[in-house]
Image (cartoon, rainbow, N blue to C red; front, top):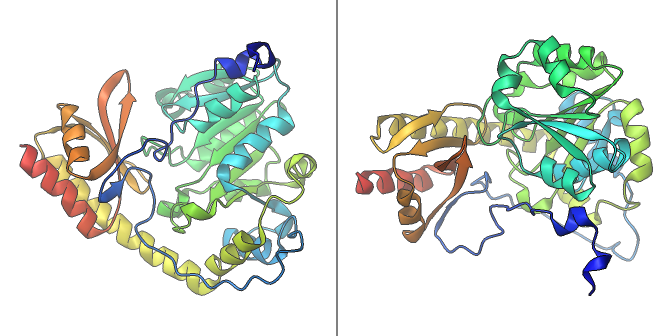
Amino acid sequence: MSNSLLPQNIASLKAYSSAKSEKLTGSTWLNANESPFNKAVELSLDELNRYPKPQPEAVIDAYSNYAQLAPTQVLMTRGADEGIELLMRTFCEPAKDSIAIFTPTYGMYKVSADTQNIAINELSQAQLQRDQISELSERIGSAKLVFICNPNNPTGSLTPVDKVASLAKALENSALIVVDEAYIEFAPEQSAVSLLQDFNNVVVLRTLSKAFALAGLRTGFLLANDAVLNPVRKVIAPYPVSTAVAKIAEQALTPDAVTQMRRQVSILNSNKSKLEAWLSKSPLVTQLLSGEGNFITLQLSDKTLISNAMKAGTIMRPFTLFGEDNWLRISIGSEQELEQVKLWLEQSE
């Protein structure tokens, strides 16, 4: 194929490197912020010859109940990743508009923008946490979409809801504030969903991949008011949700299933506290980012410790953060899985 067919932004695109994109072998998987809890589902599929409902009412109703919103404020997507892409396709003009992100943060905001030839105004997490609203607004400039991952991956930091509200107010006529709440079940009191009562320029991204233990289902939700969702509905694929996915998602959102999810979150938060205590005592850990989410990010005294863990079958996620390549993110797994982390540290001392 001739290279002349390829647009320049795609030719120079650096693809997102997911935790599963590398061919790794191991026995303990703590690299992708997955839940250690496997979910049993029941499926009876006798209508696969028919197209699915574009937005399955049973799932939309169940999620709107869970999020305490009206069904019209909920759009089901293929993971939160599709929500990110849809917002850019709907609201940003290629080669003209820009988005704002606060790094280090989730890598797909950048990849989606680069794919669609949308400029990126890269600010820092420190600026998001520290700067006054007037300073932040000025730095954000003309960006159409402002992505706030909350809790932030990979640092776990939280932006207070009142700060998100103040930013939404300041940018009311110029930008959408997109709050990515992939990890919000681990800090539910910090959700920005309540802001939809007062702001048409606030959008919340949600997923069933983390706390709901359904990463393999690829199900997410866009939560927003009509001003945002009506144009997005024009852009989304005609049948984005398969019949099988809709049936499983519906089961995952029953009151009993939500209660079970909350119980599992409580177990994971408890496991996280124990892991944090071990890590804080280890002489091999030079810095610990204590935040929210089902992961802990830390800096090691020596990055070869990571390859030693990999060789032993304990797979965690290496990171280059703040210009240094000896960072590691550990997903919170079962007690037995975290014992492997403890064992690795103790044997490395």
